[in-house]
Every structure is written in C-alpha cells, then in structure tokens.
Image (tube, rainbow, N blue to C red; front, side, top):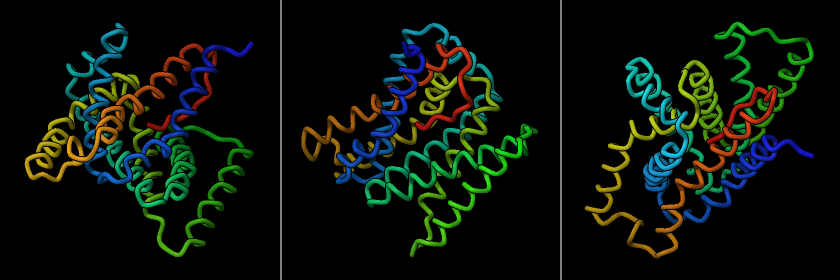
Length: 244
C-alpha cells in the first residue's frame, strides 16, 4: 500500500502541474492585478491554515520576533513575487512551455548553489546529468527566435528563492505567510488604486472573474500544504524543491 505521505506529495505536485489551466481562466485580467489578488487571498488562506496547526503558528510568531529572519523573508518575498508574476505573464501570453523551461533550469541552479554556497559534493554520474541538462537548456535558448527571458526569469527567481529559503529557519507554510504579509501593503494599495481609477477587473467584469481571483489564494496554498504535510510523513523524503 502506498505511503500516505507519498500520496499527499503527489497530490501537491499534481496541483502545481494544473496551475496553467487555472491561470488561463484569468487571461483577460492584467497579470499585475492577478498577482496582487493572489498575494492577498493567499495571506488570508494561510492565516486560516496556521490557525489550525499549532507548530506552524509557533514558527510564524518566532519569525516575526526575529529581525534578521524578517529581512531575509522580505528578500525571498520579492523573489517569489517576481516568480509568480512572470509565470502569470507567461500564461497570459501563451508562453507556458518557456516558463516550464525555467523550472527545468531551476534544479541546475539549485545544484550550483549547493556546490558553491553549501559546499556539497556531487558524484560523477550527477556531474554527467548536469552536463546533459545544461546542454538541453542551452539548446533551447539558442533554438528559439526570441530571447527566452520569461523562462530565465522564472528559473533564476525560483532557484534563488529556494536557495535562500534553505538558509532560513522558518518552515515553508509560516514562511510564506510572513512573505505575503510583508508585501500586503503594496498589494492592497495596488488593488485600491485600480478600484479608485476604475481600472480593476475585480467586481467590475463578471461573477466568475471575481470567484477565480478570490480562489487564487486557495489554489496557491493547498498544493504547498499537501506537499509539506506529505514530506513529514515520508520516512526519508528526497531532496526536492517545491513550486509555489
């Protein structure tokens, strides 16, 4: 019988794999507005989840009381905002394959960070795998007609986020709540600006658009929670880097 943890982790990955199908429902809304709503509603959903899990709640308040931790979480908040925003732009502009190339590139940067920053050693087979993967990335870059800035932005922002989060003590879920809360003034201010200037799609387009924007928080958080919960139930979880 399959381990419950593996099932939860797989469910999280399936959720992330279905992301493009969800964001395409909001293709008629500007990427910046979708991003702002994603951050706002994610913060609310995360508050609910953390309210039910004492361990996450403790870690959340520990992070808030640590100035150094807050500074690093602000940096990672900027990086994940770039990653989320560029990915939404990719979906809105039919560049999902290019964005996927970014997530293919991301593990290579993670490994490079592990070697340079964390002084990790890799064997000959892993070096060979890196060489093949790197060749594939460069082949893609030079085979397309336009410079794949979307894929590179997705890959480097996500890899940088993953490397820095490995250096931060706060776990994934409470850490993401702190990150979204740090940028909520900017997100909320932007949403209010759009509303005041009658440029907002929210509450001005149709009911389905409003619902999709509100559910963006739930869609963002649930795969992460499933992955985090599953990882704790697997006896020896593999070293993986999640996508959020």
